[in-house]
Amino acid sequence: MAVIVQAISSSATPTVSLYVGGTADAHLALPSSAGGGSVTAVTGTSPIISSLGSTPAISLDTTKVPQKFFGTSAPGSVTGNLPGDLFTDTTHNNEYICGAPSGTAAPACTSVTAGGWMLGPTGATGPAGPTGPAGSAGAAGTNGVGLFWQPNPPDPAAFAWTNQGTSTAVKNAQYTVLNIPASGSHSLRMMLKAAPAPPWTLTAQVSVNCLISFTPDCIGGVVVSDGSKYIVIGPMNWGNGVSVSLSNTALEVTRYSNTTTVSLQGALGGNLTYNNVFIQLTDTGYVSTSVDGVTFVQLGYLGSYLSSQSYIGFGADTSNSEPMGLTIQNWQLTSLAAATNLPAAPPITFADIATPTAPSAGNTAWYTKGGNLCSLSPASVEACTGSGGGPTTQTDVSGSRSFGVSYHNTLATPLFVNISLLCGAGSVALRTDASSTPTAIVAASTNGTVVSNYQFVSGIVLPGNYYQATNACSGTTTYWIEWH
Image (cartoon, rainbow, N blue to C red; front, side, top):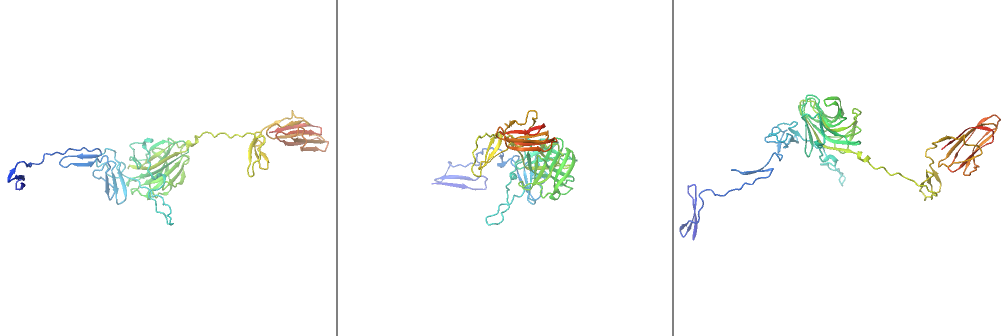
């Protein structure tokens, strides 16, 4: 029989023995010190970091994975924050992002400022939903249905800076922010690109991020230029040392004669009820705005200040000793110019019909005849357009026409004839019909005195018909004119 006995004493090392038949057996021996095993290190793959030592650990690389911080007011020097980290002010329901340049050591952002903690844009309320089947009003929408509810920020690489200075443009999946440096006077910083061939429409959703300490105004938004002068359309805030609010924000149109000189500034309507505003500009200079990006209201016209609208883009001006930001959450540039490059439509041709067939009741047959467009009714009544605009040629044939001789109208259009002569007593007549010796009198004039007077006859000779003038008085032909 084998028995295992553990001896516990005040010694630091307890012993365990195996007794077989009352005698200790040396086959069971426990080490008197810690075990001799080992732990193999496992190296993490970015952004997972592993570490060994007295306390092994696995963590995330916070330079590559954004950290999330919370507070009850606007963020300041949050311990350990890095570029791209997020901060939520739970009291005022505001979201901030650390906009410090990549690689900035912690704490990367220490205050709410351009290039520091930047307030993100607030989305607009979606449109109302449809009426429910029971007739009650639909609930308010949550995500909206318009084109601009999916963020589509502009790519700074598609634009070129004008008067950049130390300005920067940062783009992420949600928006593009222009960080504008402080300036003691007006300095319009812009990123522009060539406008497409008209007609075009530029639509964008913009907001200005101005500091509380602003004393002059800050403005930013859509920019249009002819290459030397500029117009900015967007929200303007006049700080006057108070917090940026809707009571001191308006949609402004500001003209710049150059990048540092304002020539005219004016508001489109009263104060805004929102800072995050949709602006729409056409190549003809009309400006519209919208709350939801779906329904736009036209506010004004830019006029003829610019010689052309050759460049479009975005820009901002602090005119202040404090920096500012311009956020563009959505933008779209549409051009219909390509639709004008369509192939020419094939010409419409008609063929003459010798004997047209009368159409059925309620219809009209169309065809050409002698170069003219004609129609035929169900009752076989024909109507032709003739030359489609009256005579276009006038000819004096006095030297080649004689009384008592028939003349044939071989034209495809009617021939108008006018004859005037000076004669004594007697008459003058004009005959025309389909016969080569026409007998149908269409005009006649008689002088009942022996005194010479002017006699006039005129008429229209249809295509294919003949005409003949007769003179029963002695006289001299003064004019013999034909029009066709």
